[in-house]
Length: 237
Image (cartoon, rainbow, N blue to C red; front, side, top):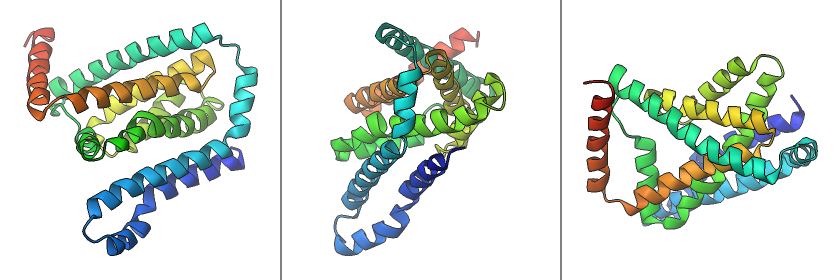
């Protein structure tokens, strides 16, 4: 693996952990605005992290663009297909989690992100734009791409999707995250353009943010109950 890939991974890790160092300092400076300081620092760290990663990955992005034979129409088509495939995979994974494994529907991670977004709307750029770019470059371009050179697609996609799921910090929903990661790897291989899984990832996250931002907690709870009823009908419950 090229040395710059290790620097990218290190940048991502530092970005995720830097709050433990700098947030206590900010809390001392702004003792009455701890929540706001935490949110704005997260936006700042993710933005800086993205800039550094893009600079480090610039040779790969230029090389990939030169080698790719994907047309604009192909990129659009696979991006649309990828969104539907990801929703289908997510739906199957959710059905398995709720009906076979007894895991409650809903993500604490998503709920936390939406609570923050309702407080400071600009935070939405992280789940909608910045995080998808970072995650696809790291988990698909670097991790999956490196594994795919040494093993078949299925195993490489499975391992990278597993790591992708673990990093989200919700082990109970590992199957959902991993199923989406598998789809992202599939469209990446099909198009040989990292731009496609980035677009698919950004679209999924943006739709989720927009929908949940426009819904009240009561609406979300009602939708969960309706989904439970649909799942019971599908499995003959």
